[in-house]
Length: 280
Image (cartoon, rainbow, N blue to C red):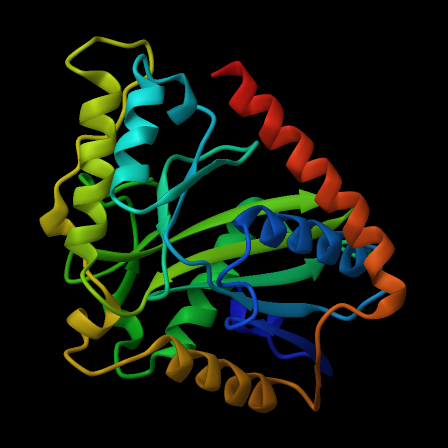
């Protein structure tokens, strides 16, 4: 049996904490940052990296979401609720980002040896279990029916989902991303997405089957662990855990010599988003 923790126990980790600095910026900038790190880590220009990021009131839509029959009205309901909507050019469905949701990206290289998709998911599962020892093996990975953006690597405790995992692969780099609902009400976030789908469908049948959202199956970690856990608490836990896993931790954002690459990926991400919105 493979120990996925071995992927995490390495000589040097890089830690890019953007949990405060990205809040008021577009989530598209975070996708560009992860693409940049995928390139840098994949080509071994940078050591493996953990990046944390938070964005205020944003709903990230998948391509299928943008094909809803009444998508314009549905996006308007998000705007009326105070949420900005963007479209990512990849798989998956709508997810909610806000100040109580911490996103974590683990960026690894497969230049020397390949890491298959299930392994990428298992590495993140191991990381989250290590991060919350008070929950440990109570954290399970299987699809939570009735959650938003359901998938086989939904993370839950006692059948209630608090996180979802996705992957981005580029230039032999892998960014395994998780959104952790740390604070606030998981059910309220789910209600927002339920209303989005109800408005977007208005009872019409579609070729693609959209999830029927049941808010009661979603919760935040502070609710599930019955403790006053904050996003900042989790960021501190990550930093301390990386110091245990590695001999050395490099802390800091993108370096001046990496910014040109970031600008390239940022332009690409914004152009793709504009094309997706134009199709609507």
